[in-house]
Image: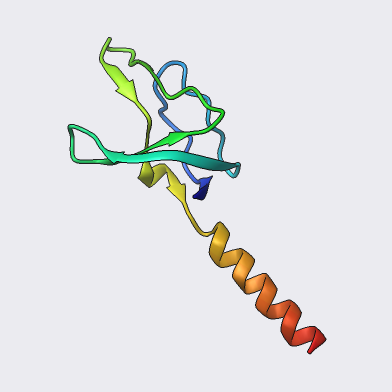
Length: 83
């Protein structure tokens, strides 16, 4: 699944995702805080917070998965224009 980062504020130490960039989700799971979390391909996915607590993956609320919807919309518009 492809997602776009919409929030790169207040990231833990070592995290390297950037706003408005598209990423590939390798794994999706629910962490111990009952949050949906993504493991992102090509990104640092674990480390320690500034308070020394371990973190793994990125909260799904930092992303939108509208890439598929946008692609479908573009395809529909092209078909309408050509067809």
